[in-house]
Length: 544
Image 1 (tube, rainbow, N blue to C red):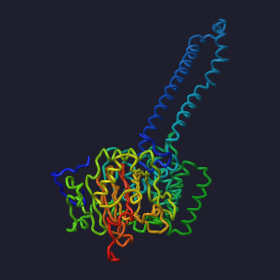
Image 2 (cartoon, rainbow, N blue to C red; image 1 turned 180 degrees about the vertical axis):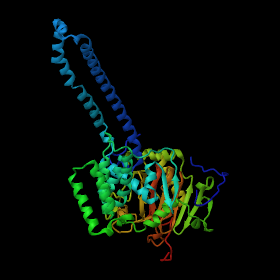
Image 3 (cartoon, rainbow, N blue to C red; image 1 turned 90 degrees about the horizontal axis):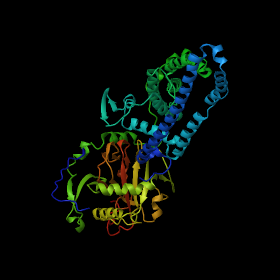
Image 4 (tube, rainbow, N blue to C red; image 1 turned 135 degrees about the vertical axis):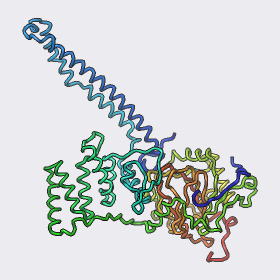
């Protein structure tokens, strides 16, 4: 790990020994996106069958064409001689009356098309919806913002940021693809439809560049065209104040569509504005990113996400340490856990190798059938939100013996009572495209919060298990404490949410940074106040 060079010696061993996801909102869980691959493989098979049938149909048409052409080349050279033969005359009449009719009005092409459509519709439930396309596009823009990624590099399949004019590769993925002009158009259009011209300008610029490079030729699978991209880009520049460039793009659009009345009106409007107020011609030279409606700590959050756990000043604190931890429990004496103290205020600890690969896979398999869009507290109720993009499922300890084992292990390490209702059921989370959870508290900050429905008090502590690794991104960032922790596969992170007086610890404000590359799975165990009276006593000091 980058944040603290702890060395553990292996003298003591730790002694711990495809179900479809929910329909819709595919982009919020990478597990569902993976399942879409198998759906497309079926579609490829259907398309192959359609092509084979169409090739057979075309082969029949070619054979008919060759037969008739040969007759006109050989037999009908002399029309009088040919028609003198009644057999030749009969076959000509029969062919013109029925054979041509069968070829021209054949239902075979329609039947082939209908068969393809019927096969496609059988898979429709497993296909992404419009919300998925929009959510995936927003995910790309989120990654662009949080990790300061260069759009021109993203389009080429590279994850690169630019700082002080210097381009730096953030990550070099093993597998990547370049984006097409139509891909960029759809991302830009999602931003455009939200009146987010900061993003629409950047993505539509790339769309126009790529469409121009292909000669503006349209492909049947594309939704957008060069004309569409120019149209949206021109208006985006106008809305950002760059009127002269909006005029130039509109004039280029008229070259392709000279009778477009709306664009002609726009050109007239832009020319008039430039004549009346020439100083506004290029006022939009500096694009400004839209402000967040609810994220007040955006700069700190994004900085911590970008460092991905590398904060040497924080981790140089000599009071931080690593050790083999037993918590004074007889159950851990023979197999102590590798503990890494990450922070003293708030108190945050990382337990290495907390879970085995087999246990992690079991937990993920148990959760998959129940994965649903993650929600956040909204007053007394719960609702989905763009600032939390993932799917989650609650797994009871009765679902499988592995869940009970994890509960027992958590209790041994923390000394807390984690049985329901003093501990919530295990919540398993799978993040989606650009999946994240912006800064939030785990404990309730309102007396009407759904957290209190268990009637066991507030969430006194959080125990989060990393069930998978990621290649880049996905760190856990503690905003006010000013440090972040990268994903450490098979490890678990623990912190207290409440002070001993029962008040919430504001320093525990934390976030799940967007996953840049990888499939992030975590399991959360939230432990409540009640049931801990003898395990985690209150302090005599009301201020503590």
